[in-house]
Structure formats: C-alpha cells, structure tokens
Length: 365
Image (tube, rainbow, N blue to C red; front, side, top):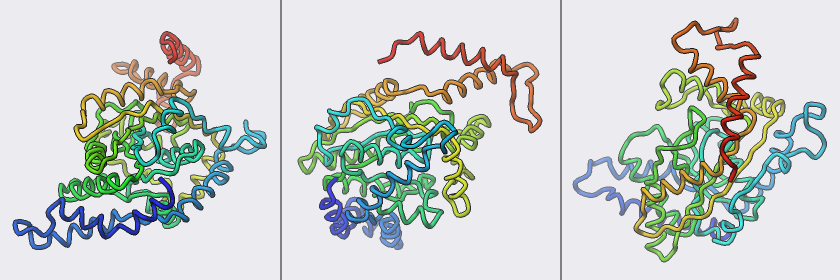
C-alpha cells in the first residue's frame, strides 16, 4: 500500500465511518436510543491513525533496532553483522506475491507470538512490498511507547475479548470499507495466538470474506496470501503453554503482556540474550471474488501452513518434552525442585531422537 493510498484512507475516514454506520443501521428506529453513540465509540477505537510519512519512518527505524535486539552479543553465538538480515529468512512463492500488487492482498499468517505482526512487517519491507494494515490486540497498547508506535505502523486497534455482536458487526464493516478502498491488510485467521504451538486448524474467515466481497463490489479482486511464521523463540510461551496444559487454551491469556510499562526493557534483554530466529514462508496467492468459498479457502490455507512449517530446534525439543509428559500419564511424574516437570537428560535425548526420526520420515517440500 503506497504512502499516497494510506494518506487517502486517512483523509477518507469520515466517509468510511458513514459507510459503516449505514451498513450496521446505526440509529435506525428499531435500535436502542444509545445505539448510534455506541457505534460512534467503536469507530473511534478502530479509526486508522497512521500517516504515510510516519509509517515509512517507523518501518525504517525498526530494521536496525530489531537487528540489534535479535542478534546475541558477540561471543554468545552471534557476531558482527549477524543481525536481522541473517536471522530473518524468507521463502516460499515470493515471486507470485510480488506479482499480484499490494493493493489486492490480504495476508493470512499463522499466529503464535506477539512478535508475529512486527516480523511480517519487516519481511514485507525486505520484499519491497509496502506495509499492510493489520489488526492488533488491545493488550499491545498497554505500554504508552509501544502504543504510539503501533498506530504509525498501520495497526487497527481491536479487542478480541469483546463478544458484543454490535462491536463485531462494526469491526467487520470497517475492515470491509478499508479493503474496498484498496488497502492491503493482514488478518490472522486463527484470531488469537496458538496456545499449544500447533498449526491453526479452526480458522475464522469472516473478516477475510467480508474484505473480499467489499473489494469485489468495487471491481477489485482480492488475493489471500498464506504466511507461515516460524519463530525460534516465543517470549510469552510460558503463559501460553500453561494455559494449554491446564485445559484453558480457549480462554483469553492474561499476564503475558511483554510490552506493558516496566517490562519493555526486560523484554529487550531477553531477546538480546536468546538465539532468536524467524523463518517465514509465503504460500501462493489465493484469488477470491464476491462468492467466497469458505471451505475451499480454509482447506487451501491449512495446506499452505503445513507446507510452510519449519521445524526449528526449539520446536523439536518442545515436542519431545510434551511426548514425555503424555507418556508419563498414569505413573509417577518426576518433578524438579520448583515443581516443574523434569526428566533425566538421557530420556530427553532419546525423545528428541525419536521426534527427529518421525520428521525425517516425511519428505520436505
């Protein structure tokens, strides 16, 4: 999405709001007296606050900043020049994505970490594609500094924990209005981060379908681009895994906000100390018109996610440990001094070898 188009979207915000109000019937006689005010409040939350010059400036700034943070200190497995370029690997059907054109794209990435949208934004910049607007959870705004950066990066602030149907209707109409005006979008079809580290299965395609229909109504054909994001380290994994193990994976995760006041410096230090790497695989663009085949689109996305999955060493070890946990059910489970599950090193090494052998039985794409 070009700087001019982004500025045009911002200038057109009054028309977008009016279009949304008309679509949801705000203020209609059969609605509650306060309905129009409620819809206006939702629109104020969703309003695009990005300017073209600010987005370009922040995107340029992120490259060296993330490069410095991703690269471990010299002597810890990193070295001079081992920055973001060496730690952000991009592959897949990149040429086909570049050939479509940014104003007809909806990126549909997997979602396992808070860093996903940022990493994807850096990948788009690397490929020479203009940044896409993306839906960002409201918890990312709890740090004032991060919140100020989200807007210029093209974030649309949403609250995934809000079950109010009126809010969801306004959100859907707002996303559709952006797509109808040629905005490139990033929409996570899994809706929220995966708790167990597996690939998305139950996909929510309502927003993508609404975007495709709205664009088609104005003569644009949307192409949905699957993106599999594989991170070596998920900083908030401890919270996500805990919810999964407690059988609470369907709940909203609370307490993992890495960017809240007081945690930003600690988050940067953790990234700096860890061997962070990101591998992104772009699938072939999927053309969608006004009659969106939701089942076919979901099947195509799942297939692309499986094809784009990259098993990094942390993933292999994590799966091996989980296999040990599952196998230990029904017998005494060894525990460490702090109550965490623990096994002798030799057992872990055998489990890792078994997991690796299972992976090796399937040919790489």
